[in-house]
Image 1 (cartoon, rainbow, N blue to C red):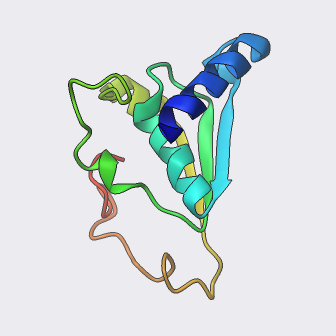
Image 2: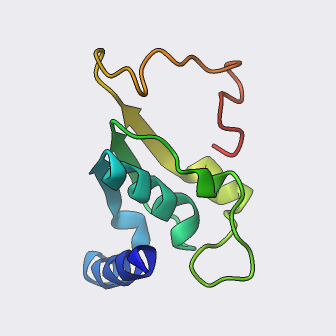
Length: 111
């Protein structure tokens, strides 16, 4: 339900801003997780980007549910054009210090 409400808000903001490509999503902690989920799989059009603070991509992005209206599988083009940023402080032990398995694919293959 939360994602559906946020999608409606984004739709209204996109109308005012002149399209989804003008919208940047951002959030901290759980808000950052939801912002990333919305940017990648919540809205079909590509938003300008997402900046998440002290958060990570949600597990739903590992296996995006198909057959439901809430999420949509992102295209390769969308993922290539989507600008994502993640920031955690140096004392954040939850998200800092976890290095990607390799520099090409990182620890989250979809992103």
